[in-house]
Image (cartoon, rainbow, N blue to C red; front, side):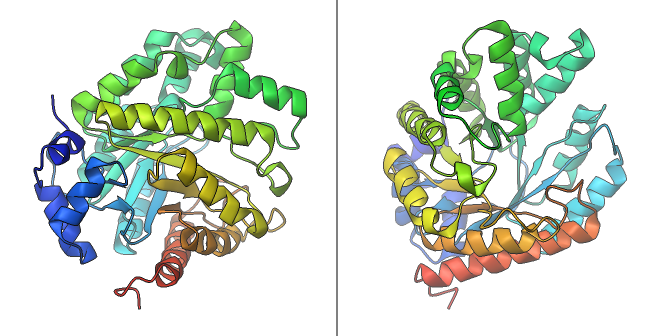
Amino acid sequence: MTTQVLKARRGIVTEEMEVVAEMEGKTPEYVRERVANGRIVIPRNNIKREFRYCGIGEGMSVKVNALFGTSTDREDMEMEARKLQIAQEDGCDSFMDLSTGRDIDGMRAQSLKLAKVAMGSTVIYQAGVDAIEKYGSVVEMKVEDIFDTIEKQAAVGLDFMAVHCALNREVLRIMQSTGRVTQVVSRGGSFLTGWMLHNDKENPLFEHYDRVLEILKAHDVTLSLGDAIRPGCGYDSLDPAQVQGMVIQGELTRKAQEAGVQVMVEGPGHVPLHHVDATMRLQKALCNDAPYYILGTLATDVAPGYDHITGAIGGAYAGACGADFLCYLTPAEHLGLPLEEDVRIGVRATKIAAQIADVARGSRPAW
Protein backbone atom coordinates (compact mmCIF):
# COMPACT_ATOMS: atom_id res chain seq x y z
CA MET A 1 0.00 0.00 0.00
CA THR A 2 1.54 3.30 -1.07
CA THR A 3 0.43 6.85 -1.70
CA GLN A 4 1.89 9.89 -3.38
CA VAL A 5 2.85 11.16 0.09
CA LEU A 6 4.79 8.02 0.91
CA LYS A 7 6.48 8.03 -2.50
CA ALA A 8 7.43 11.68 -2.04
CA ARG A 9 8.95 10.90 1.35
CA ARG A 10 11.12 8.25 -0.31
CA GLY A 11 12.38 10.84 -2.77
CA ILE A 12 10.25 9.64 -5.69
CA VAL A 13 8.86 12.24 -8.09
CA THR A 14 5.63 10.85 -9.56
CA GLU A 15 4.13 11.61 -12.95
CA GLU A 16 1.50 13.73 -11.18
CA MET A 17 4.18 15.82 -9.44
CA GLU A 18 6.02 16.37 -12.73
CA VAL A 19 2.84 17.53 -14.49
CA VAL A 20 1.91 19.88 -11.66
CA ALA A 21 5.44 21.30 -11.51
CA GLU A 22 5.37 22.11 -15.23
CA MET A 23 1.90 23.68 -14.99
CA GLU A 24 2.87 25.84 -12.01
CA GLY A 25 6.35 26.86 -13.18
CA LYS A 26 8.02 25.04 -10.26
CA THR A 27 10.69 22.38 -10.12
CA PRO A 28 9.57 18.77 -9.59
CA GLU A 29 11.62 18.75 -6.38
CA TYR A 30 9.70 21.78 -5.07
CA VAL A 31 6.42 19.91 -5.55
CA ARG A 32 7.76 16.60 -4.20
CA GLU A 33 9.05 18.21 -1.02
CA ARG A 34 5.70 19.87 -0.28
CA VAL A 35 3.66 16.78 -1.07
CA ALA A 36 5.93 14.96 1.39
CA ASN A 37 5.36 17.47 4.19
CA GLY A 38 1.63 17.93 3.51
CA ARG A 39 1.69 21.48 2.14
CA ILE A 40 0.58 20.43 -1.36
CA VAL A 41 -1.99 17.80 -2.35
CA ILE A 42 -2.57 16.38 -5.83
CA PRO A 43 -5.95 14.62 -5.73
CA ARG A 44 -5.82 11.42 -7.74
CA ASN A 45 -7.21 8.00 -6.88
CA ASN A 46 -4.86 5.09 -7.55
CA ILE A 47 -7.38 3.83 -10.12
CA LYS A 48 -5.66 5.40 -13.10
CA ARG A 49 -8.00 7.44 -15.27
CA GLU A 50 -6.64 10.26 -17.36
CA PHE A 51 -7.54 13.81 -16.42
CA ARG A 52 -5.95 17.22 -15.85
CA TYR A 53 -4.21 17.03 -12.48
CA CYS A 54 -4.01 20.02 -10.19
CA GLY A 55 -1.75 20.87 -7.29
CA ILE A 56 -3.41 22.58 -4.34
CA GLY A 57 -1.44 24.36 -1.65
CA GLU A 58 1.76 26.26 -1.00
CA GLY A 59 3.24 27.94 -4.09
CA MET A 60 0.40 26.73 -6.33
CA SER A 61 -2.13 28.92 -8.10
CA VAL A 62 -5.46 29.20 -6.28
CA LYS A 63 -7.79 26.50 -7.56
CA VAL A 64 -11.56 26.50 -8.18
CA ASN A 65 -14.03 23.74 -7.37
CA ALA A 66 -17.55 23.36 -8.81
CA LEU A 67 -20.55 21.48 -7.39
CA PHE A 68 -23.20 19.38 -9.12
CA GLY A 69 -25.70 16.69 -8.34
CA THR A 70 -29.26 15.51 -8.42
CA SER A 71 -31.77 15.92 -5.61
CA THR A 72 -35.18 14.52 -4.77
CA ASP A 73 -36.63 17.70 -6.30
CA ARG A 74 -34.69 17.46 -9.56
CA GLU A 75 -33.24 14.23 -10.87
CA ASP A 76 -32.18 15.31 -14.35
CA MET A 77 -28.89 13.52 -15.01
CA GLU A 78 -28.65 14.99 -18.51
CA MET A 79 -28.78 18.49 -17.04
CA GLU A 80 -26.02 17.60 -14.56
CA ALA A 81 -23.89 16.31 -17.45
CA ARG A 82 -24.36 19.64 -19.25
CA LYS A 83 -23.41 21.54 -16.09
CA LEU A 84 -20.21 19.52 -15.77
CA GLN A 85 -19.32 20.21 -19.40
CA ILE A 86 -19.89 23.94 -18.90
CA ALA A 87 -17.81 24.07 -15.71
CA GLN A 88 -14.92 22.24 -17.32
CA GLU A 89 -15.05 24.44 -20.42
CA ASP A 90 -14.92 27.52 -18.20
CA GLY A 91 -11.90 26.25 -16.29
CA CYS A 92 -12.87 24.58 -13.02
CA ASP A 93 -9.96 22.61 -11.55
CA SER A 94 -12.15 19.99 -9.86
CA PHE A 95 -15.76 19.25 -9.01
CA MET A 96 -17.82 17.43 -6.43
CA ASP A 97 -20.85 15.28 -7.18
CA LEU A 98 -23.23 15.98 -4.28
CA SER A 99 -26.17 13.96 -5.57
CA THR A 100 -28.99 13.04 -3.21
CA GLY A 101 -31.45 11.73 -5.81
CA ARG A 102 -32.53 8.14 -6.22
CA ASP A 103 -29.69 6.86 -8.45
CA ILE A 104 -26.60 8.24 -6.72
CA ASP A 105 -24.40 5.40 -7.97
CA GLY A 106 -25.54 5.95 -11.55
CA MET A 107 -24.95 9.67 -11.29
CA ARG A 108 -21.44 9.08 -9.94
CA ALA A 109 -20.63 6.67 -12.76
CA GLN A 110 -21.78 9.26 -15.31
CA SER A 111 -19.71 11.98 -13.67
CA LEU A 112 -16.58 9.84 -13.58
CA LYS A 113 -17.01 9.01 -17.26
CA LEU A 114 -17.29 12.71 -18.18
CA ALA A 115 -14.70 14.05 -15.72
CA LYS A 116 -11.64 15.77 -17.18
CA VAL A 117 -10.58 17.09 -13.76
CA ALA A 118 -10.35 15.68 -10.24
CA MET A 119 -13.66 14.49 -8.80
CA GLY A 120 -14.85 14.47 -5.20
CA SER A 121 -17.92 13.82 -3.09
CA THR A 122 -19.39 14.32 0.37
CA VAL A 123 -19.81 10.75 1.54
CA ILE A 124 -22.31 11.33 4.34
CA TYR A 125 -24.88 12.51 1.76
CA GLN A 126 -25.23 9.07 0.21
CA ALA A 127 -25.04 7.31 3.57
CA GLY A 128 -27.82 9.57 4.86
CA VAL A 129 -30.03 9.18 1.79
CA ASP A 130 -29.59 5.40 1.88
CA ALA A 131 -30.53 5.39 5.57
CA ILE A 132 -33.76 7.27 4.82
CA GLU A 133 -34.61 4.67 2.19
CA LYS A 134 -33.68 1.67 4.39
CA TYR A 135 -34.77 2.78 7.84
CA GLY A 136 -36.99 5.80 7.32
CA SER A 137 -34.65 8.38 8.85
CA VAL A 138 -31.06 9.64 8.82
CA VAL A 139 -30.84 9.19 12.59
CA GLU A 140 -31.34 5.43 12.19
CA MET A 141 -28.22 5.18 10.01
CA LYS A 142 -25.82 2.41 11.08
CA VAL A 143 -22.11 3.00 11.59
CA GLU A 144 -21.23 0.27 9.11
CA ASP A 145 -23.41 1.98 6.49
CA ILE A 146 -21.17 5.05 6.67
CA PHE A 147 -17.94 3.11 6.26
CA ASP A 148 -19.39 0.92 3.50
CA THR A 149 -20.21 4.13 1.61
CA ILE A 150 -16.68 5.48 2.03
CA GLU A 151 -15.25 2.19 0.78
CA LYS A 152 -17.64 2.02 -2.17
CA GLN A 153 -16.93 5.56 -3.35
CA ALA A 154 -13.17 5.18 -2.94
CA ALA A 155 -13.17 1.89 -4.83
CA VAL A 156 -14.81 3.34 -7.96
CA GLY A 157 -12.22 6.09 -8.36
CA LEU A 158 -13.10 9.30 -6.51
CA ASP A 159 -10.03 11.49 -6.10
CA PHE A 160 -11.03 13.36 -2.94
CA MET A 161 -13.76 13.11 -0.31
CA ALA A 162 -15.25 15.54 2.15
CA VAL A 163 -15.57 13.57 5.39
CA HIS A 164 -16.97 15.30 8.49
CA CYS A 165 -14.56 13.85 11.04
CA ALA A 166 -13.93 17.02 13.06
CA LEU A 167 -17.42 17.25 14.54
CA ASN A 168 -17.66 15.73 18.01
CA ARG A 169 -19.75 15.93 21.16
CA GLU A 170 -17.52 18.60 22.66
CA VAL A 171 -18.14 20.90 19.68
CA LEU A 172 -21.89 20.39 20.03
CA ARG A 173 -21.72 21.05 23.77
CA ILE A 174 -19.92 24.34 23.15
CA MET A 175 -22.40 25.34 20.45
CA GLN A 176 -25.36 24.56 22.71
CA SER A 177 -23.89 26.42 25.68
CA THR A 178 -22.79 29.55 23.79
CA GLY A 179 -25.60 29.78 21.27
CA ARG A 180 -25.64 30.58 17.57
CA VAL A 181 -27.80 32.54 15.19
CA THR A 182 -27.77 29.93 12.43
CA GLN A 183 -26.83 26.75 14.33
CA VAL A 184 -25.53 24.03 11.92
CA VAL A 185 -25.78 25.03 8.24
CA SER A 186 -23.63 22.24 6.78
CA ARG A 187 -25.90 19.53 5.37
CA GLY A 188 -23.41 16.80 6.28
CA GLY A 189 -22.94 18.39 9.67
CA SER A 190 -26.70 18.48 10.26
CA PHE A 191 -27.04 14.78 9.33
CA LEU A 192 -24.38 13.86 11.87
CA THR A 193 -25.61 16.31 14.53
CA GLY A 194 -29.09 14.80 14.35
CA TRP A 195 -27.62 11.29 14.52
CA MET A 196 -25.40 12.11 17.50
CA LEU A 197 -28.17 13.78 19.50
CA HIS A 198 -30.77 11.11 18.72
CA ASN A 199 -28.48 8.19 19.54
CA ASP A 200 -26.53 9.94 22.33
CA LYS A 201 -23.29 8.74 20.75
CA GLU A 202 -20.05 10.19 19.44
CA ASN A 203 -19.63 10.95 15.74
CA PRO A 204 -18.37 7.64 14.32
CA LEU A 205 -16.18 9.47 11.80
CA PHE A 206 -14.35 11.10 14.72
CA GLU A 207 -14.41 8.06 16.98
CA HIS A 208 -13.12 5.70 14.25
CA TYR A 209 -10.92 8.19 12.41
CA ASP A 210 -8.11 5.66 11.95
CA ARG A 211 -10.52 3.51 9.96
CA VAL A 212 -11.35 6.45 7.68
CA LEU A 213 -7.64 6.98 7.05
CA GLU A 214 -7.08 3.28 6.36
CA ILE A 215 -9.72 3.22 3.61
CA LEU A 216 -8.54 6.45 1.97
CA LYS A 217 -4.90 5.40 2.15
CA ALA A 218 -5.64 2.11 0.39
CA HIS A 219 -7.02 4.03 -2.61
CA ASP A 220 -4.83 7.17 -2.31
CA VAL A 221 -7.93 9.33 -1.94
CA THR A 222 -7.26 12.86 -0.69
CA LEU A 223 -9.12 13.58 2.55
CA SER A 224 -10.98 16.87 2.66
CA LEU A 225 -11.73 17.43 6.34
CA GLY A 226 -15.34 18.60 6.19
CA ASP A 227 -16.28 21.75 8.07
CA ALA A 228 -19.48 20.66 9.80
CA ILE A 229 -19.60 23.71 12.05
CA ARG A 230 -18.88 26.52 9.60
CA PRO A 231 -20.60 29.86 10.28
CA GLY A 232 -23.84 30.30 8.39
CA CYS A 233 -23.91 34.04 8.97
CA GLY A 234 -21.34 36.72 9.71
CA TYR A 235 -22.44 36.96 13.34
CA ASP A 236 -21.33 33.36 14.02
CA SER A 237 -17.88 33.84 12.48
CA LEU A 238 -15.05 32.83 14.82
CA ASP A 239 -17.46 31.87 17.59
CA PRO A 240 -16.37 29.27 20.20
CA ALA A 241 -17.90 26.31 18.35
CA GLN A 242 -16.13 27.17 15.09
CA VAL A 243 -12.80 27.68 16.79
CA GLN A 244 -13.09 24.38 18.66
CA GLY A 245 -13.87 22.68 15.36
CA MET A 246 -10.73 24.22 13.87
CA VAL A 247 -8.65 22.90 16.77
CA ILE A 248 -9.96 19.38 16.16
CA GLN A 249 -9.32 19.73 12.42
CA GLY A 250 -5.71 20.55 13.30
CA GLU A 251 -5.32 17.41 15.38
CA LEU A 252 -6.87 15.24 12.68
CA THR A 253 -4.79 16.87 9.94
CA ARG A 254 -1.57 15.92 11.71
CA LYS A 255 -2.76 12.34 12.15
CA ALA A 256 -3.57 12.08 8.44
CA GLN A 257 -0.21 13.54 7.45
CA GLU A 258 1.60 11.13 9.76
CA ALA A 259 -0.34 8.23 8.23
CA GLY A 260 0.69 9.19 4.70
CA VAL A 261 -2.78 10.33 3.58
CA GLN A 262 -3.09 13.49 1.51
CA VAL A 263 -5.28 15.93 3.43
CA MET A 264 -6.75 19.39 2.95
CA VAL A 265 -8.91 21.32 5.38
CA GLU A 266 -12.34 22.78 4.68
CA GLY A 267 -13.35 26.15 6.05
CA PRO A 268 -16.09 28.78 6.11
CA GLY A 269 -18.59 29.99 5.08
CA HIS A 270 -19.97 33.41 6.03
CA VAL A 271 -17.03 35.55 7.15
CA PRO A 272 -16.99 39.37 7.33
CA LEU A 273 -13.87 40.82 5.72
CA HIS A 274 -12.33 41.92 9.01
CA HIS A 275 -12.34 38.26 10.17
CA VAL A 276 -10.87 36.75 7.00
CA ASP A 277 -7.17 37.23 7.66
CA ALA A 278 -7.42 35.96 11.24
CA THR A 279 -9.43 32.92 10.09
CA MET A 280 -6.90 31.98 7.40
CA ARG A 281 -3.89 32.47 9.69
CA LEU A 282 -5.47 30.51 12.55
CA GLN A 283 -6.46 27.59 10.35
CA LYS A 284 -3.03 27.37 8.71
CA ALA A 285 -1.28 27.52 12.08
CA LEU A 286 -3.51 24.86 13.61
CA CYS A 287 -3.38 22.54 10.61
CA ASN A 288 0.36 22.41 9.94
CA ASP A 289 0.01 24.55 6.77
CA ALA A 290 -2.15 21.97 5.02
CA PRO A 291 -4.00 23.27 1.95
CA TYR A 292 -7.09 25.27 2.93
CA TYR A 293 -10.33 24.71 0.98
CA ILE A 294 -13.07 27.26 1.57
CA LEU A 295 -16.66 27.88 0.58
CA GLY A 296 -16.69 31.50 -0.51
CA THR A 297 -16.01 33.14 1.77
CA LEU A 298 -19.28 35.09 1.79
CA ALA A 299 -18.49 38.65 2.78
CA THR A 300 -22.12 39.57 3.58
CA ASP A 301 -25.39 37.81 4.40
CA VAL A 302 -27.74 40.26 2.69
CA ALA A 303 -27.44 39.48 -1.02
CA PRO A 304 -29.29 36.23 -1.91
CA GLY A 305 -29.27 35.86 -5.67
CA TYR A 306 -25.88 37.55 -5.90
CA ASP A 307 -23.74 35.22 -3.81
CA HIS A 308 -21.38 34.64 -6.74
CA ILE A 309 -20.43 38.30 -6.18
CA THR A 310 -20.25 38.24 -2.37
CA GLY A 311 -18.38 34.95 -2.56
CA ALA A 312 -15.90 36.29 -5.11
CA ILE A 313 -15.20 39.37 -2.97
CA GLY A 314 -14.58 37.26 0.11
CA GLY A 315 -12.79 34.53 -1.86
CA ALA A 316 -10.35 36.94 -3.47
CA TYR A 317 -9.38 38.33 -0.08
CA ALA A 318 -9.26 34.89 1.54
CA GLY A 319 -7.02 33.63 -1.25
CA ALA A 320 -4.72 36.61 -0.78
CA CYS A 321 -4.58 35.75 2.94
CA GLY A 322 -3.74 32.07 2.42
CA ALA A 323 -6.72 30.04 1.18
CA ASP A 324 -5.62 27.63 -1.56
CA PHE A 325 -8.87 26.26 -2.99
CA LEU A 326 -12.12 28.17 -3.59
CA CYS A 327 -15.46 26.39 -3.85
CA TYR A 328 -17.66 28.28 -6.24
CA LEU A 329 -20.93 29.97 -5.38
CA THR A 330 -23.63 30.53 -7.97
CA PRO A 331 -26.51 33.05 -8.07
CA ALA A 332 -28.74 30.17 -6.90
CA GLU A 333 -26.94 29.79 -3.56
CA HIS A 334 -29.51 30.06 -0.72
CA LEU A 335 -32.34 30.08 -3.26
CA GLY A 336 -32.43 26.75 -5.07
CA LEU A 337 -30.55 24.35 -7.31
CA PRO A 338 -28.35 25.97 -9.97
CA LEU A 339 -29.19 25.82 -13.66
CA GLU A 340 -26.60 25.70 -16.44
CA GLU A 341 -26.17 29.47 -16.65
CA ASP A 342 -25.79 29.67 -12.86
CA VAL A 343 -22.91 27.22 -13.10
CA ARG A 344 -21.22 29.24 -15.83
CA ILE A 345 -21.53 32.45 -13.83
CA GLY A 346 -20.33 30.75 -10.65
CA VAL A 347 -17.21 29.28 -12.22
CA ARG A 348 -16.29 32.52 -13.98
CA ALA A 349 -16.79 34.67 -10.88
CA THR A 350 -14.71 32.31 -8.76
CA LYS A 351 -11.96 32.09 -11.42
CA ILE A 352 -11.75 35.88 -11.30
CA ALA A 353 -11.46 35.77 -7.51
CA ALA A 354 -8.70 33.16 -7.76
CA GLN A 355 -6.75 35.24 -10.27
CA ILE A 356 -7.04 38.33 -8.07
CA ALA A 357 -5.71 36.26 -5.16
CA ASP A 358 -2.84 34.91 -7.26
CA VAL A 359 -1.74 38.43 -8.18
CA ALA A 360 -1.84 39.43 -4.51
CA ARG A 361 0.26 36.36 -3.65
CA GLY A 362 2.97 37.51 -6.04
CA SER A 363 2.39 34.93 -8.78
CA ARG A 364 4.41 35.79 -11.89
CA PRO A 365 2.12 33.77 -14.22
CA ALA A 366 -0.90 35.63 -12.79
CA TRP A 367 0.80 38.96 -13.52
